[in-house]
Amino acid sequence: MNKGRFRVRAGGRDWLIAVGVAAALLVTGLSGHHSATGLNLLGYVLLAVGGLALAAGRRAPVAVLAVTGLCAVGYQAAGFDVAAVAFLFAVYAAMRAGHRIVTVVVSVAVLAALPLAALVSGLHDTGEAFAQARGALQIAWLIAAGAAGEALRQAEQRADEAERTREETARRRADEERLHIARELHDSLTHQISVIKVQSEVAVHVARKRGQPVPEALLAIREAGREASRELRATLEALRDDDTTPPHGLDHVPDLVERAGKSGLEATLTIEGQRHDVPTAVGRTAYRVVQESLTNISRHADAGTASVHINYRPDTLAIRIDDDGKATPDSAPEPGIGLLGMRERVAALGGRLRAEPRSEGGFTVQAELPVERAS
Image (cartoon, rainbow, N blue to C red; front, side):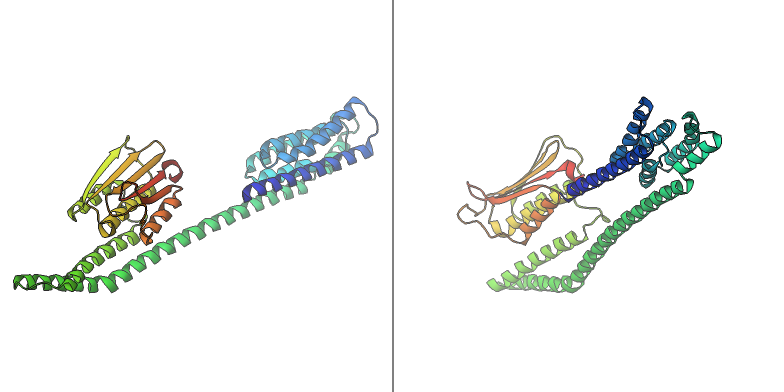
């Protein structure tokens, strides 16, 4: 939106400059010629065309350079002793756009053609023709216009490079911070959670071996330790899952379904459509959506079965995870951090995610990831 407004403003400025230059050239030409012969009319037309051509300088700098050069030579041949202002503007625009070789070649050609055009006009001898050519297009001004365009082009290139460098630095710092958090979590929590998990399992085992009843609190501690260990492992994998390490993707989804089956959930995987390669970001997001959905089913849904459907479409990857849990349209669960994370991942790729209870009971998570936009 802002870029569109900028283009409109830039185009308006181009037309303002073009009209101003054309008016200045015509006023200068009229001040020295008052007759209405065919040759003079042609000169006036060339003066106007040379100035108005500058309006297209951003879109076609080389073409404008050629047109303004021909117009300058043309009205010189028609006997108009008018400076080639439009051509100087065109030299500047072409150099700014990076067409250095073409600009130099055209400038040399115009410099050579201007004295010949003055001679063709029949109003000057050889000496006066060269003097008029120098007055029409001073070499110093030509060099200045080219140098100014080249300097601005290089400045813009440096600005673009600085912007890319800032983005790369920010991305690198974010990766470093993510890995730092992963290390801190691993060092500070993994050991303690492992101790809780092992000690609780040992206590349950000893109690059962002795034939003693196992307290519900001890069983809850053991299950919480197991769940905390799984969650911490998944969190560390997510934090370390960046572009510098082999990412989880669609090829790893069967492993997720298999692990869900080992935890007591009857999980199935169905793949539809003609399988094709998808961008890494799409595959990673699809993996995370399935992973988080199956985790939520195991923890909260009180479900017996879960189904994962992956549909390869020409320009979209569609994912659906259904369960037969306790969720109903009248008792929709509160969205948690996991669901929020899924929405953010899908939205970052320009996709859509829908997560809600099913009318027949249970919960469904549906995601559509555009393949072309993410690539």
